[in-house]
Length: 553
Ligand SMILES: Nc1nc2c(ncn2[C@@H]2O[C@H](COP(=O)(O)OP(=O)(O)OP(=O)(O)O)[C@@H](O)[C@H]2O)c(=O)[nH]1
Image (tube, rainbow, N blue to C red; front, side, top):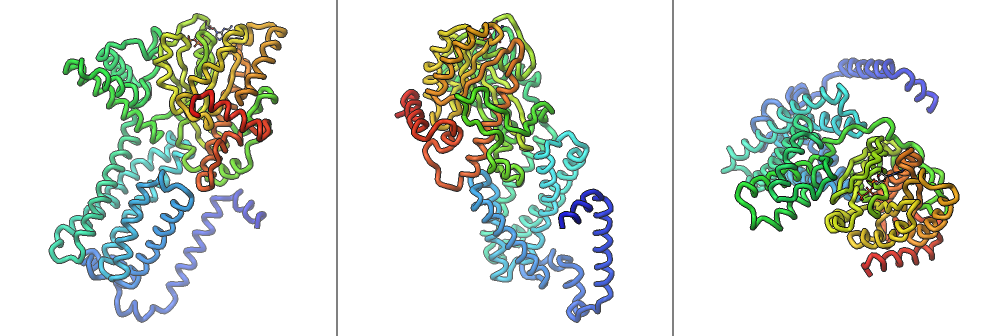
């Protein structure tokens, strides 16, 4: 069998041709068979399932084949809804579940009462559009948004959406409204159709926006609105790096907070500006959610092997490769929503330890020897492809200066990964790591956070000096269950390896969490899995220490 498949694989074109010929042959042979009696009696029954009576009399006309078609289709919808629930995707795919429940209830009604079978068959026309919609999704998963195939498919998609989905649904709605007075249970069908119409119109809007009107994350418009937003609230520089526009405020959060705090004192014009800014934030969030504005993954962001830890003594685990379950899930494309998620990473630490330089070295391959304090926060998006699955990190650069800490700490919430940076030439910055950890964990679930301690400016310390501080750092890393790294943003030493390791471990954790969703979840279970180099008792003790330090227990 394997040998046959490998031969077929090497000649895909000829293989398709052979199968096409086989189907053609079967078709010809079937045509030679005598025509069944029932077909001779009624041409429409055999040749045309839907036309013309079914189209005109949706309520009571149907053929045996159309009844069979509705049975088969209902079976499909039941199977698909069951699959969504059993695989633990009910919450993430709630729209599909609502859609499927409406379809199943309407179709079951038809099958039991033998009414509206024609309507059900007509409704199946919308599935023609599912072909192009699915192709679009597959191409997005393959990161082929810029391919000619995606471009062609996006127009085809709109065409089939209008011709088959919208027209069919509107025709059915029109039919029900037009014949409402005499139709059986017309109100039930009308309500179902209205609900589905609203859903497909919203989806159509999202589709148009994603494929035809994408917004650039750093478009001049974003800058314009940021300036306007800041001017409106008299907070011109508080969110941005000195002298430089870097990023739009975090989706929907900051602008709305400011709005709540200050709306009473604003003039009408300022209110309008601020609302526009908040609206923009919401749009960016929506775009981010659908991953429609993110650039394709760069070739040098592809991770096929698990990057190794820096020091075995302080590592989440010392395994040479990704967890087998994760590898299998990726191969079988069972990673659920992981490919669409963005993991939040916060980088904290004393002022001027080199947080900004670290992020800039990785994201822009740049290094600035002039110190510019981060005012508030800044962030970068980095896209990876891990084991063939897209995966994104949102890297938050926070201010180390005390006076900006209150602004920066409002952005700590929701972090999956906390990176605490210290300067390897400054022992005090290592001593402050515990304080930074405590601050970061106040805003997050201590058992769910992955923690890294990073020694920066490695190029500045002599081997003897470095080895002394490394001993202290390793000890601390073990105590707080963190993975330890040392880097130099000036030379680039270990920077890429470090972020690749962060991305890989975050990805692994997300996939494991996705796989475990349906199973019982232990407290700190996912994190404990990451800490297999520590024994169980130690891990439990350390997690409780961390919880205590995070002020949660
Ligand atoms: N030699 C050397 N200098 C570095 C390195 N990383 C950062 N620096 C320098 O350290 C200073 C501070 O760097 P930043 O990255 O701005 O520090 P930061 O932690 O972001 O500072 P805050 O914004 O105050 O939090 C700058 O002058 C950098 O040039 C490094 O790896 N080697």
